[in-house]
Image 1: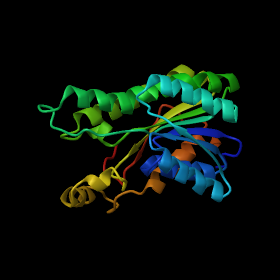
Image 2: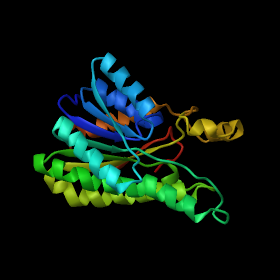
Image 3: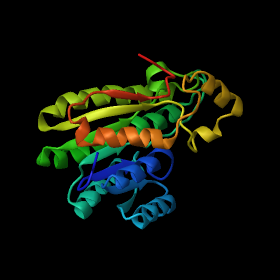
Length: 247
């Protein structure tokens, strides 16, 4: 599953799933461009990758800002010469029952979780089309498949990513570019650490494998979809949820 010679851009890479994916892709030989708002955490990640013999570069980025997305993609291509792999992982939550949800919280989640993926895809496609090779991987969620009370904005954004994935897969498949989604279940991250212990215990009861997921579980799936081993897979939603949702 070697990614030697490939260049990957990962959004939301400063922590959680994005960080785990950056470490895994670098381990598989890819040069990784790590992007997020927190430059300090990105620097720590890049130092860890380079200390292990990998290649990494830091790109501070707010994916909700279209001009920042454009300039960041240009900077990555200027430094590495191309972008082979795009991992749209950046995401936020602004949870509230829909009757009380503020429009600003709806807009913020849709902008960060869904619109940013469209913007990033649009900017990296010329590089991928030129080389006739590309891997686009959108990090969705099990809640984009089954919904979740109090997360209408988040669930809608993650479901939107699935539709976007399938549309892009049809648009660019003839150019040897694949587009797939990963739908993580309950994964132990800084975001889920904010949830109550009662919520976590109830969540585990719904998981046949009897444990919450690790970032490594998602990183392994993403590395596979980014590799030549997944060359004939596109428009697919890979559920990595411990059996929380089947079918």
